[in-house]
Image 1: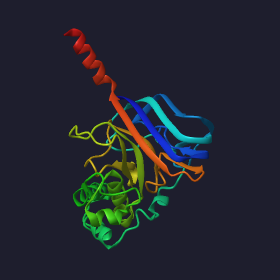
Image 2: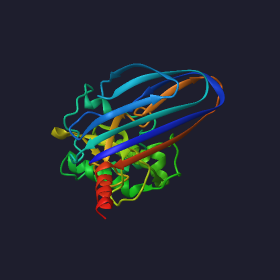
Image 3: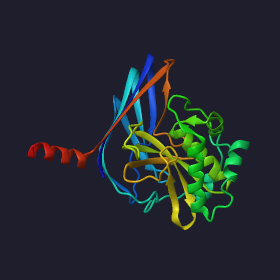
Image 4: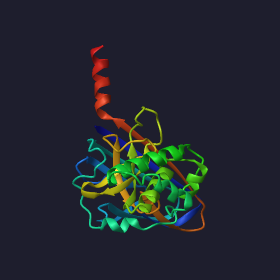
Length: 280
């Protein structure tokens, strides 16, 4: 699939801030399932700093905005070619030992209910079967319901509530996988459409579980599938905060608000539609 992505994040402050420093994890990962073209990142009024590839294989670059300013716009544009690898992260280079992803965080720390959910797959035939069944269990336990949870909602809280969004599904799957000794991590990225064609937030999140000789395999409980060619992978971490596409700090007393818009277009479908209109 050939996708064109435009992602804009607007930060506004009720009082001018003096300076703003951001760390951006907004460049598509390099592996067999995707390849980026003409990828560009721009920060309004910003000065691009050094970039580096971290131990997890993510490209991170720093930006500085010198104020005073009341608004900062981060814009990402580019094209990505994707193909379905059945969720397996083939050809991806990183240095971190998978066992590092057994460590809990505040967002993924299991309670009794999460441990009970993890125990429901005790009769799984192997780690891959176990991972698929854990993902399905999370899908059944947490209904997709936008607006019912917040960024700081934990996996335990989402399970107790029985509702959440992709972030909550990912956190819960990570928690139950780690309960069973499976390294698991949070992944941020984009999703073109759901399996049913239903429109949801194009900025998306899912989990990866380290499954024996297969290595890292993606699971998306929010859509009951493994990532395919509709998905674009940006970066990963122990949880949503650790894998956040944009992290930053502002110098000043202004209260920050944020608006995010993501537009993803299937270029091949657009070409087909254009050709059909021309013929008609």
